[in-house]
Length: 380
Image (cartoon, rainbow, N blue to C red; front, side, top):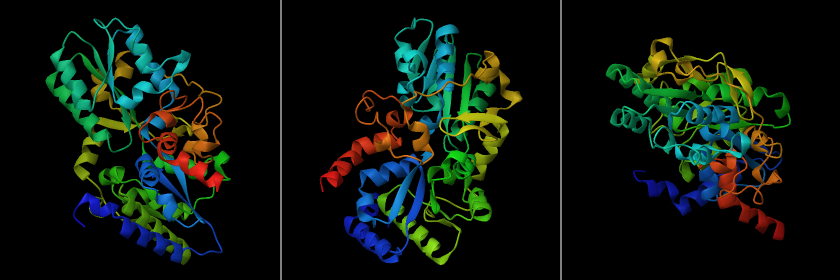
């Protein structure tokens, strides 16, 4: 297939659904976690669930960069803008995530003297760097978030800032690592009731890191992983591949997204990241707690462009809203509809947690595409 619309062909999707139904053993249940929020939205948006047999269940995972960013990290950015008079630049979804004291980055912006400080949406790390170059009197901090997909662009702007000798630009680094999150899901003591038969591996992340870093899932945990593209037929083909592995008692790392993902990934991007970043000993994730070697920090050679070092920042953990179930949803222990705030106090217009804010969040996906299916099921 050559074109996007071919990966959304309804006839082919129904055929794959029938193939999955034939392959699924009616005497057992299957539970697969789609790690990435992009897959969650594809499943919800295209009605993939409606094409699966009832004994094949999909469980949402933690692969949403905005969703796993803890409150304390957002508070840190707000503190920088309000107390250090800097301009924070970050992606749009980050601006609306609830923080402490009823604030978010967007609400904090209304309190700032825009001549001295600001909070702005950007589409890329390069946009933040360009702002610092255009306005040398303004102290610009890029709030960097994301898994391995967005880490190389951040590394590149740090290299460029150093080469330019740019003195009014720095990065508040919150880049996290996919394999560590998978380990946390499989090892989480509160998640023992979540039975997983395998994972749909992330697409964009895997174009950077390749399929090799998932080997430990098969070797140590004896769980299959199928890396899949984001189109509905990609997802359905990967589910069929997972069902086949479970039936055959296999636990291999397979690559459905072979048109973009290789065994070793993008080595040039990996080398760039290695030059600029190193492992953090500990990093707190929303829903997963503090995990060792699960995130990156800026190397000492780039300390002049590291906002944490430059402004003497210390991280302080902050609890989520006590009624918000984002943490348990990110671990796969609950579904969005299990949260008592879902669809009432918590909507995309009035989010109480990050899973309802992010364009890749499980709650936002279910609110936009799945809640009417729930109503129909109850009515039936």
